[in-house]
Length: 433
Image (cartoon, rainbow, N blue to C red; front, top):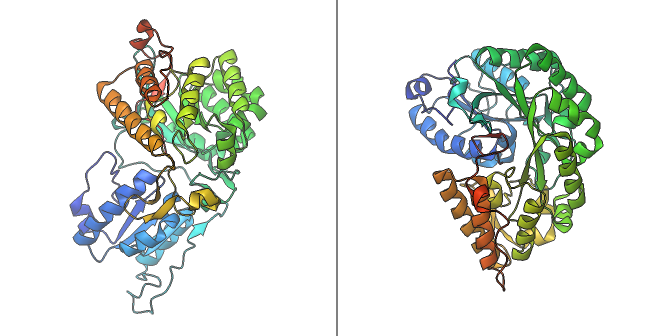
C-alpha cells in the first residue's frame, strides 16, 4: 500500500499506474477540492483503477465525485466500508459497477455509516515525517512538532453552517481511550511534541476527554496539546478548564462565529455574545489561551457590525489571540448545509459551483463584499510579510473605517505593540474550515 499526502507531497504516478484501488480521503473542503482535481490525473494514468472517496465531504459531493469516475463513496464512520471494499476487490468482485460481469448497480457499502466501531490505532507508516507539517509557535520563539488524533468524531449539535451536520445529524461517536493513547504514543515516538485533537468538539464527551488528557499527561508530562470546544460547553464545563490547563493544553480553539446575537441565531449556535465575553473572562482568569474563530463575512454582516466586532476584540484584549485569516473568513455553503433552510439565504445563492464545491452568494450590500476583498488582501499581504497580529489588526481597523460615513478613531494599538512578538502560542498553519 502506498500513502500520499497531497498537501505536502507530489502525486506518485508510478504508484497510481500500478494501483487496483485509489482512495481519496476528504475530511475538509480544501482536501475535497485537491482530490477532485487529482482524480482527473488518476483516471488518465490508470483508467482501470477502482476510485473511492471517503471522509466528511465525500457524501456531500457524491454527484461530482461519481461524475469524475468514483465507484465507491463513504462518509461518517467509513472504516468498515473501506475494509469491505478492499476485501471485495481482493476477491475479484468490483461490487455493483458491472466490471465483474454483473449488472451495474449501487455500491454494497453504506454511503453514510454511523456505526459504533471498535477502532484500532492508525498505522501512519509511509506518511511524511511530522516535521513536514505545521508547528506550534511559542512566544519564546521555540517551535514544537505537531501530531494529530481524535477522541470523538461527529458532533451532538446542529449548527446551521457546519459541514458536520449533514453527515452526522447531531450524533457523535467515541474513539476508544486505549486507541487514542496508543495513537499519541506512536506519534510521540515519531517526534511529536504537541498534539492537536481534531474533534469537532472535545467536550462532546467531557469525562472521556478529561480521562484521556490526564493519562497522556501522566505518561508524557512534557507533551502539550490543543483542542476545539464550543462556547456553551466551555461555560457548562468550566470546572474542567483548569484540568486542561494543568495537563498541558496550550490553547482552545472556539468557533465563536459572530459577536452579534441576531447572526448567532441564524447560525443556530446556542450561545450569545455575552456568553462569549463570559468565556473569555474565565480563560483570562485561569490563564488558558483562547483561539477564537469567526465567520466574519456572511449575508447578515454590516460594515458597522464588522467595526463593532473589531472594537470588541480590542476591548477584550484578544488582538494577539485572533489569527489574521479570521478577519477574512466568508461563509462557505456546501451541499446539505442547514443554512439553506433560511429563506433569505435561498434568495441570495446561485447554482452549486462544482469547482469550488459550494453555493456562490453575493452580499445584499455590495460595500460589504468590497470590504471583504480589501480585508482579504490585507491578510494575504500580512501573511507574506509575516506581519505581527497587532499590525494586521490595525490595518484592518483603518480599512474598515474608510467604509464608514465619518472618520473613526485610530486603532487601539500603540506603536510598540505593532511590532511586538506574539504573546500567545499558535499553529503556524492558520486554522479554518
